[in-house]
Amino acid sequence: MAIIKCPECGQEISDQSRNCIHCGYPLKKQKGTVLKEHRNKILAVGAVFLGICAVIVLITFFLNRNSSKAAMHLADKTAAVFQSESDREKQLVTKKGEDFVSLVITGQIDETQKYLDKPYDYLGECIYSFTNMEALKTLLSKYTAVFQETTVDTEQNLAYCKFEVNHPNPEELINAQRDSIHLGMEDDTLTNALLDKLEDSSLTYVTDDVFINFHKIDGEWKVITDSTLYSFINLGRTVDSTIESLSDNEKKMMETENYIEEYIELNDFLVSECEGYSGKVPGIKNVSLKNNGDKKITALSLKLEFLNAEGNVAETKKVTVIGIMDSPIKPGYSWKMESDKFFEIKGLRDDIDITKVNVSIGDVTLSDFAEASVKSREEEYIENYLELNDYKVDMCQSYSGTFPGLENVSIKNNGDRDLRKVTVTVYFQDAQGKNIAEDSFTVIGSLFSSSLLKANYSWKMEPDKFYEIKNLADEVDISRYTVEITGIEFN
Image (cartoon, rainbow, N blue to C red):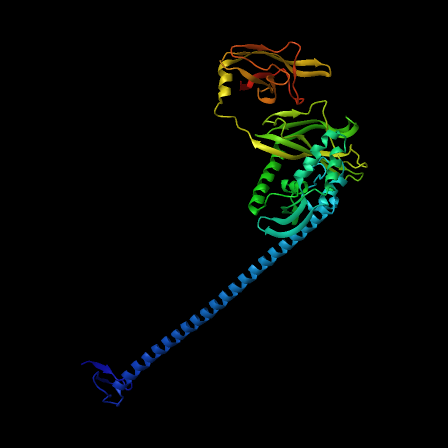
């Protein structure tokens, strides 16, 4: 037992007493009451806390549910925006595609230029050698086109329209022109032959797919002036387009444009009246080029922009100066047109002043340049059995003037094979010894040379003969050269 003080009177009493013996204060009841009140307070606080937690949970639930709905609604709105944007772009491309094709087949050629990503020389690019635009318009008027579908990629800014085109059979048109050659080669012979065929009731028509390709430039959809456009105009058909193929072509076009800008030099040219078979005609000559890159130039055209009195472009023409039948310009090589040669500029309007012209590199076809790593049997025979005993490069005199030429070639065949053809190549070097130009000649086996070099035989060129070396640029010093046997054919 312990002694405590009464909370009422302060007298000392036993802790086991129910009431104070001095004042009667109820000790046990007070104690229980105090504990109960304390417990009730704790329970009340806990209830409040749990209530607050419940409210927070409810608020969070509703906020999350509303946020989820809002996010879903925003996603739906965003998808709708993208869908509507895609639809708008598709409508724009479709409208431009239909308008462009309509202008082409109705002969409104000048109006089509504003739809293109760059000027297109319809007459110059025509495979039928028309002498006037009216003939081309007559051909195109025979085309009929029906729109099929449009595909747009807004991320890559690429698109195409597909049409179904009914047109004259191009094979029959080409055959008609070929069959007319016996009538003579007057300027209008081929043109008239095709125009006559277009009116022939036996001419058949075929239906093909045509794809008109687009890319967006400065926010505007433009028709790509590529081989697909060329095929549509000339043949009435094209290869199928896909966004993937357009993307690949776009990359190649960018690579080619960068190569032209960085590595190809147009060092000289002259646009003037030139003397042709039927009199003076506008032409371009004295073209000089340099390939400073690491690829071969297998084809190249020049773009000619003729200006009016205000300095604006009045007409654009394209002239191919290096074609697929010409020798390519190798990396580091120079090239110059022969001095007695020119390319006629066809289809110029009479009001064009040919002295007011901008000339630049147009279309270029490039290919990778790599020396063969494994020698052929012909190359091994050249290395092991043929001797090039003599040769000379000098300025040589002919009836038409003085030209750089190859003469005095002498060859010995020490092998056991007869050779029906032997080709030698002259290489010219710069001051550092790097090849910058070359020309090749078939000295045995050509129309104007010996027909056979037998085994163990020697051969020497006639002393009064030489091979003219062409396409040498002004930078080439003909005193710096080497000559090699570069090709043979076994008999």
